[in-house]
Image 1: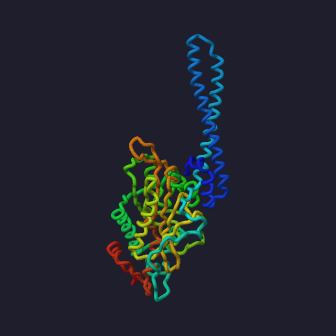
Image 2: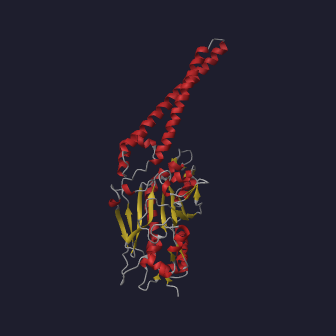
Length: 427
């Protein structure tokens, strides 16, 4: 959530930043917020003046009564003052309710390094490796997976409908092994603490990270209990410290978590729906960090390198893309996408979005820290990135390391992890 003080201090700058994101009538939106804020502050000022007047009058009335003087006129006046205070309190409450409904719908402002424009303006920052070369036409993963007996698309549809898949045998073992391997790497080599979190969360938890109210239509909810299925482990992990004040010495905090992720993908019908490219349920290893404001940009660079290391160790061709303002996620100030090359489908596939949310999520979830004993509290900066997301990582592995006969020769380093490096057709 945006800092109302920033809106007061630099309304034109905020309006311009929101316009970069494509927010229609950004100037009018900012002015409407400021108009209500001014009305609220004016009402509060008058309330405080009237309460001070009432306090002084109460003392005078008490003194008059002790002297035996008539204080009826002052008492009647204070009744009017009390009525006016109640009216102004109602005004403040109404504005607070309006702001509480409007502010959560305003996206974060983009970082100054973020380029203008939409998806067409995304900037390739760096590229690693090169595309694999084949002496044959590479097959897409759905052909490979079904012929090898490791991917059962028909069963997924039969059980749950379109947008769901079933992995069998070595396919299921490969995904499980990759998850364990990535968690081990991030805890052992990168200093993250592993956490296991709930997959059903309260609406205020979804609101804390920005999923609600913006993405309600793209999320699953259990109507009977009012609990939401998480679209990413970012949601419960970030909210582990909701409404807490962390000691400064505790920062930075670095968590890694595995979870299934559930997304309705509303409006995505017809796009990349074949195989495992766009599904409603998928597995992901997530990295979440809590940082001091001054260190969050350096932390984003480090986080991106940590996520990319998975791809490098697997020998997968990838690139890092800096997203333009119009392509940023709702809560993000700056985002790097990691895209891996999938030769079978001939596409770059996003396997991680590494983002710095600055204090946007922390304000929504009330996550603060105290820099030192006796100091005023400040909001932390939150960051997250997939480390990495499946099943697109599986897609890249199957398509990159396929052989002409349709079998898969996986990187040697996966042998100790999953117990095999070759996937061949059954029989």
